[in-house]
Image (cartoon, rainbow, N blue to C red):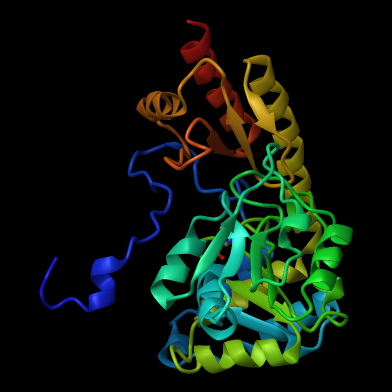
Length: 356
Ligand SMILES: *Cc1c(COP(=O)(O)O)cnc(C)c1O
């Protein structure tokens, strides 16, 4: 604390990201990174952009990331005015709070959801209402029908992994024509249907995506928003009042290449899904209750073992999973899907802790 701090800083409760371990070979199943590397085309594109001398780095990158936005627009069948690129989808979400969610009515998101949302709400002074998930940790769209404020949630939801169908998302959009509806699709490629195809029909829909999860580029920081041109213009106005160059040259080159290798992307998602199904059954054999997941993580609790204790014991064995000390979910662990070898190591360690 310091008397030099702005007033707001005293009141902030910052988001705490999952631990990035300094251990030599940790088994990292705590931040939903992809266990498989990005496409070799991505590495080539970064090398090409860098050149032998790094000459290109002398100059600022394209402030609009136009070539990247064109690639992504073509991929989704959108027009370039319907695409916004930012430094990771966290930054995109921050702009969304400021540009589109700050109105008189409190915004609505689930009580159990991405824990960055309340942090942005606090930073930007956006009031919110947390709507309880149902007993199975699902989002019930009937709870969002009243004449309320903007709606925001991940689909599939995090940290639960449960997904809504496209029909349910469409019903939600129909019920809320006068409020922005923001669908955070960080995990959509692992088992849910994207709402991008509804953008031309619903001017209140904004879809947020990232290259961090399914495209294995968490280290590059590339995220997007897709929506009606007027919504995108709002984000651009905020971005150009904040940082003109959110995406560096290497990130723009890497992002384009990531979309050019669709086969790599599909195979990587298929491997994660197969590994998730395998991990789910092995956890169930050990007595865990596992929430059905459409994401690259599972959310599980053991009826006879405290989640915080399990997480701490795994950490001693250099295996990292995520535990949230939050209401309703403090007995759950969120476990990112690793390679089969990493999942085997986790199951082996858990067996030792649970069966002994
Ligand atoms: C990982 C994640 C993000 C952030 O992704 P970045 O693009 O890496 O900033 C956004 N929303 C949800 C729900 C996530 O899990």
